[in-house]
Image 1 (cartoon, rainbow, N blue to C red):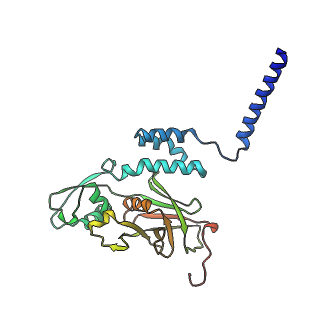
Image 2: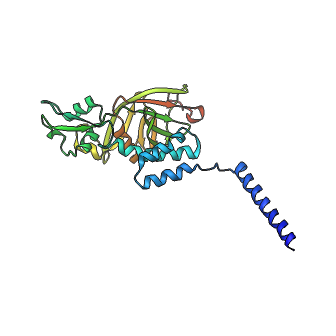
Image 3: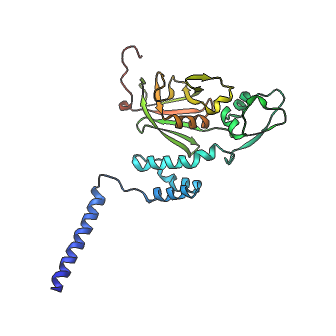
Length: 263
C-alpha cells in the first residue's frame, strides 16, 4: 500500500510540474514582472525616485507590463518636476518693468506653473527685487499612435505618460513627424481665458501643435484632435512650454482614411 501511495504521489507531483511548465510556456497572459509590484510598494512609501529607477529597464517595452511601468514612473516623476524639489529649480530676481507672462516666456517656465510655484494669486502684483522660484521646462513630447500613448521625456528620463483616445481627422503619408507646441489655451466654463489671467491656474487646457493638430479633451470641438483625459491634459500643460518639440509616430492602421473635404 505504501508503495502504491508513493507512486501515486510522484505521479501527481509530476503532473503538477508539467502543468506549471505548460502554463508558463503557453499562457495567454505574459508573466508580470516582479518589479511592478515592488515599485507599487515603494510609491505607497513615498519613495518615488526609487520606484522610477527600479522601473527604468521596463519603460521602453511594449505590452501591458511596459504601459504599467510607464504610468507608475510618471506618477513618481511628474509631481517632482512640478515642484520646488525639481533638481533644475532656480531663482529669478524680478527687474523693473517685468511682467509675469514675459518672465515666464524668458525662463521657459509655463505661466501658471510660475504662479503655483510661488503661491501667487495676482500675477500683476510682482515687483522689482522679488525672488521667483521657477523650473525651466526643456522636455520633449512623444506621441505614439500605435501605443495610443503620449509621453514626456527629459533626455532619457521618462517624466510622464498618458493614454490618448480617438485621433480625429488626421491624414498623413509619413511614418513619423516632427513638430512643436505652438499654443497653450485655457478655458473656464467654455470661455477662453486670456493668457495673463489668474484663472489660467484653474483653467481646463488645450495644446495646439505646429502641424495643425490639437490636444483636446473628449467633447471639446477641434479639428485634427488627439483626445486625452482633461486632468491628464491639464497636468501636461504644466510640463510643456511653447516651443516644446513633439515627435509623432504613425502607422497606416492608426491613421483614419480622410473623407472628401478633409484634405
